[in-house]
Length: 133
Image (cartoon, rainbow, N blue to C red):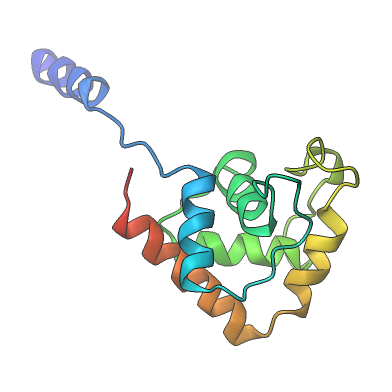
């Protein structure tokens, strides 16, 4: 029995983890599918934008699953002030842009209609399910 438990544990450790698509890849795919989605504050090379910051916040600051509709809804709820408060001093993009984009991004997300937020979440899920890493 102990041998079986050890083999199971070792099997889990030996299982390779799938790498997620990078925030840059997700951003490019989303803006290709929803070209008129707001970009928010953008740096000179265009690598900083609302979606990249949203994905970075969701995946790396909150450690939420990119494959879960519920987790994306929690992230959107964070942005519009109905869940966990976002800490501006930890917000992605604050170091790359002259002004911390948190408040502007929060306003943009708050201005989206419910169908627009649903389309955002559905598109993000589709991107992650089609590109598991």
